[in-house]
Amino acid sequence: MRETIPLKERPADIVFLAFFVMNLFFITYIVDLEQLVIPDVRDFIYPVWPLPRMVDLVHWWGWNFDPVLMARPPWWKATIWIDSLLFGPFYAAAIYAFIKGREWIRVPCFLWAGLMIANVTIIMSEEYFGPHATPTPLAVTLANLPWFLFPVLLTARMWLREHPFTRERRE
Image (tube, rainbow, N blue to C red; front, side, top):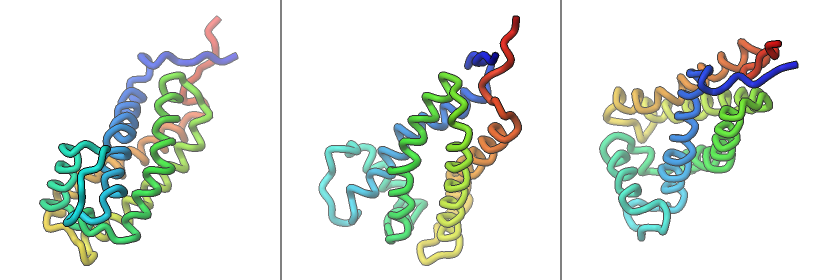
């Protein structure tokens, strides 16, 4: 019989939880949503959500560091739709699963990691070599690095243990 390992005994999972929470509540449904509800950054009315201050923050980052974010070509918007429709629900499920120690999240973690690495590779190729290349490659690389590292770390976390959240029940 197996028992769930308490979250307090899984400190690395707390780091993953923080990453999932930040992605769910800031990246996916503020930063990315802004790019879906404002198609033209040069001519727009502030939406109800995200709040104007958050829209201004996204635009500040884009104008200063990330020209492709402001150009919003179709392939870019496709990555944003993937984030909104697939990654957002994954983050919600992962938050629940990591808190409760539910091992059904293992396979979705592998799927998320592979898709995230592919998306970020495509985006960073544009950032370095594309028509909307960043004028600040170091800043953009550092800003995007977590979305390379966390998928690799999460894959290792889930790959190395068949039961990442449980152990044999102690008698």
